[in-house]
Length: 244
Image 1 (cartoon, rainbow, N blue to C red):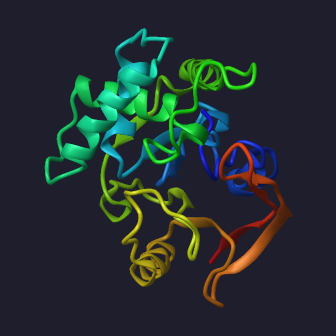
Image 2: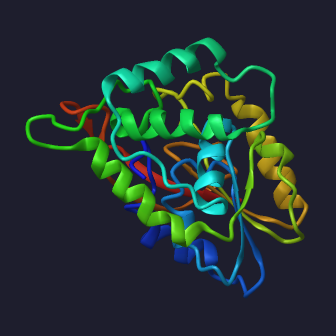
């Protein structure tokens, strides 16, 4: 699934680092799973957990992977605007339950928005200078579904994820001082850093993707990549993987 900040392009580089030392049956946790572009490459010999705070995203993945949903493959601007208006009215609220309608909101929001920005990137379209962005997004997403069928899905804050002993935890957090999704604009970095340290003390292995981290986090991999904010603007940051 196309997703701003997707780790699909670098998964082949960072996954071997994180999976080294794990054995069959061990737990791999993607605490901020997003488009699952890394998790779908984690071998199913491991117990895989996916979590995200965006309930519409999790509802979409659950309906696709656990209920055999065949979602619509055409997303008109009018339908996109309908679901966007519903989301703008409801937002995330205090209701932690998820429904099939939430899955539809997630589908239209992530499939119909440029770069998967969920109603924040604008309608991407089926015909933009001869390119069908929506169909590309849908094909990419549906191709992932068979690889994610045995995932345990959670919709919660990262610090509420149920963990097995000695889990490997991967955190693709909202990058500090960058444009954020609506679910992450109030992200508490100090609390997250302390949680990582506590997880390490509790025997878990913790890995974080970011551009910068506190000094006690060690950078163990880095690579310059090209990211697109929209159809015209790109930039080339250096992705880094940190651990404790």
